[in-house]
Image (cartoon, rainbow, N blue to C red; front, side):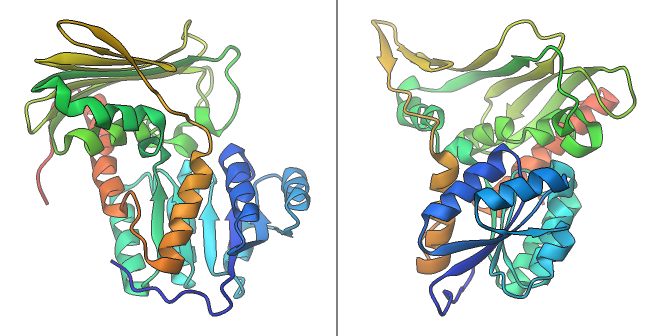
Length: 333
């Protein structure tokens, strides 16, 4: 897809946008890799950005715009709020930087399409993180799928009580985006496993006491895949959720696979077997290493921006379905 030339000095100079959880794990991974030097950091809050930069011996930038303007950066890692991903990515690519960005690439499908085209035109890496594909859950699913026979139903539920709900960007309509766009990994796991989606239905509800921030949300989507598989996706968080659930069920004609938290069982007619769920730790570091391996050695990545874009289109269809109350059919481009 790209034809990169590795850095002449074998050191990739990196700028990081963000100071939250994902940014911290990125900074740690970059600091531990001898091929990279974390040069500059831009954040939203000056005090937090200064403390963050001091921890990782990096220079503080007043804004991401100032960071992008630096000519000494080879790579920009974007771990900011969802709303800003697209415009920061566009600025970085325009300035000739490679980009690693957390999902979603953008909250706008057309913008995401344009960014992928821009990366190709500039011959720069555009890597959209999807660490859900690297974790133990996903590997366990892929390992056992063939043994389930013909698949007909999938249910995925991710709900989290938070009381009081934090007044932060993950509870902001514009900054987080429509629930299944902001939490794109919930759908991307499905499209990676089961392929093309034919149609979607979706309903969602917010509980809110002010215009921009909400205290709770619940979103329920139904996806019909081209192969006939029916999937139900439930995503919720906040003050009206009373019990956490992180569960994935796959039902086939020869058995079922139930992943519930850190426990996995493989159900067959004659027996039920516990399965190894692997780990969720170290995935940001693994993703970072794989992206750098791709830049330095040309090794293949585990996900392409086009695959992420396809899932974004599915997520956007769930948004339209929730707004209109209609079934939305996905057409081939």
